[in-house]
Length: 254
Image: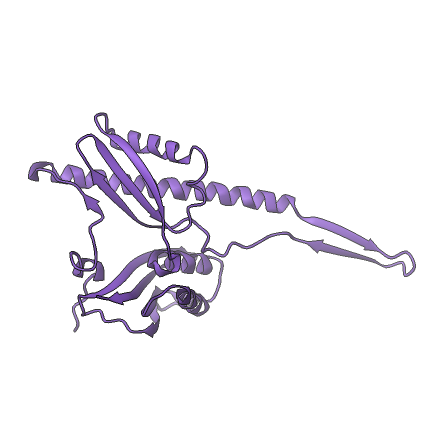
């Protein structure tokens, strides 16, 4: 049997870079590692919480914008009622998805760089300041100040996290998993990549027996270390259970 390994860790130091940059003594290493985890979890929870608030406000505004028009014809005596719903379905790709978070620690400063696909919410006034306050409470850094920066990803559909979020949105809205996978592969045409593979495992379409389905397009040299391959594993909670999505993207070869 082939031995499976994470493509990112396999290429660490060659085509993949570290997401945390700091130095610590061996006895303090575990504390710094836990601090990084708290920072990343706090940022992801903050964006997810505000995304839910925004979606609830959108549902309320959409429900209040239902227009009922009555076209009554006096000659024929018949009345016709037309109900128009002004509801626009989010495509799922416009939601804020974090590709990765870089943390650079100095003596008195912690630099946090958030790489995000569509930074719609974080561009609002006061969002960064509110996030900094939450992080200060989470890590209790009295002697260190936080510096948060937002960096937009140039090619969003080149990132596997954004494609996985898109598939999750489609599956939660009862879209066929094969249709969602094919659409995700089509979105990669907008980016300059050389290969992509999408795999979904679990109780697909509500079947009793779990199975694995995958779709592949282009090349995917997993054993070539000089090949730059992005990878993500994303769980999706549906009414039938938890589905697992794995996406490999072959960007380029050095």
